[in-house]
Length: 275
Length: 365
Image 1 (cartoon, each protein chain N blue to C red):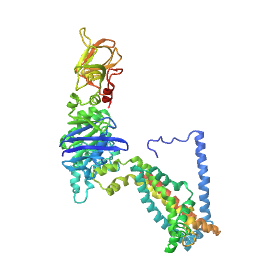
Image 2 (tube, each protein chain N blue to C red; image 1 turned 180 degrees about the horizontal axis):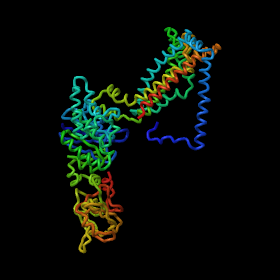
Image 3 (cartoon, rainbow over the protein chains, first blue to last red; image 1 turned 135 degrees about the vertical axis):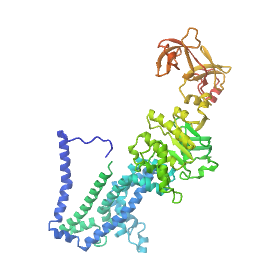
């Protein structure tokens, strides 16, 4: 929230009431109803079927892979996001505008393309395909490909949280720290990091939610090998295509639950960081 | 700790920020870098702090090559315009920062750091505020914290960049005196950047007056006042009246009076500048001087500024004691004269074709 913004007024006028009503109805229709349907579908054959869906080895493998992908993609994007935001916000250099546009690109691009570019680079007919084939390294239709696709899709999320904040804060505190004799790591740890910690955490949570939920890019790169290269979102689709609706919805509920948990955590953090 | 700056050049793109700046700050001296915005004074400060590297030139601190040291190694205390306090640290931790980030062996023991913080809180008269955060302080208090933080590392040189810019007039004056007191108490060589001539003149042992990346004059406030090295210096240091004149035999000749010229000026038509405080206004029957008519009297307290208009349309101001100004009500005719004038460098009087073109060009350059 912007500091100093006027506090919201109580809803009084008819038009305001109408606007609020329309928003609530729309959200309920577009988000609430499908969510309810998913949860309803998950428990349609009872709690036992719901639990059984997670005992399936393929489901367990999908959950493990999803966590693994997030565990690789999020830290990498954390480091890159920090570096990019730092350089964009605190320094002037040539190509800054281009870098900012590039960082944003994955947001405006279909995730399918984010998957396809890796196929073009590492696929069997891609630039490095023959070389990788000789070396016996599998990237496409294997875990490395899924990780690459996820990283590409989630690249902007942390950097975008940090850039506006860091740009607003400027570099003066860091410069002051340097003149007081602090080294690079000291400046980062004692001055920069505390100033951005909430935005950083926010970015990490968003990045994590997206990394676990990504479908398009991962779908292109995974090869859909059950128990090997299927993440949770792909597993949901596979079960659905098998007409295992209860199982599919159970896994979907788990995914939705992860997303909701992330958002609740984010809301709690925001409340704590509010002045 | 003598600071020597020798022939420093710095260019930003095509903009020359510093074009051959040389001066010396003596041990324990309080210097002010004065100049209009864009004169290069902040760039010079950043060069001294190690935040910018000059294209040419040398900076020595007691004979040691300062430019070979990084900002981190120089031990220069820098007070930023907006203070740049660490917003998530308490005042005490802000002040202790420079000591706490020292590598293991050089870091003073905790008790010593604490004692030093208390000492600095007392020196800057903010005892009891150690536990507060910067956001909970007034502008004046923040400035004191910034000074205390810079002094904590026992800097070899204290630099302040427009430290009073963000404060209101009353606090500004108070802090100005405070800063001078702190300087005298610590004896640290201090350089303060400002565009406010009153501030520069009130604080400094010596003033370094800059313009367009060059030093126009270095001297005590009194020297600058009494013997300005250039028309720019004279004009920058205070309000001026401007009046066309004819230079004859080293004197400025006006309609009704003549005045001695400060410095040298070639003969011919010119524009003279003189201070309201060196302007005399006389309504007596036998008075000599330029005939003027009083327009209005401004100011309060003991000193008044009387504004009047010459027949040629020029507006001129004379400062005088209140008792004297009382007689000069608006509309009154009087005679105006000046006790000394400075000739404006590129101020060849408008419409004077008498000055040869070559001379005009030389003066303009």
